[in-house]
Amino acid sequence: MKTDSVEKVTSADSLGKEGNNGPVLNSLTVSSGVWNKSFESNEHTYHIEVDNDISSVELNATTNASGATIE
Image (cartoon, rainbow, N blue to C red; front, side, top):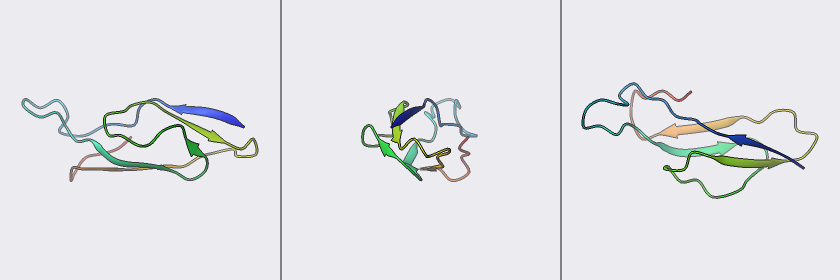
């Protein structure tokens, strides 16, 4: 098994506007592997355990705000 970390997956067009904490992620899923913990919208670091023969992993995220972008 090998592990890789996801350190930051956030971005939104309204982030930083006065009085607005910005959008948050509603979900974060992975195409292969196992998360080290359950998803929490205020958590920014996750680790994924995958088999050695896996060469790539696709992350899929959704946000709570219309018009927000995820990078």
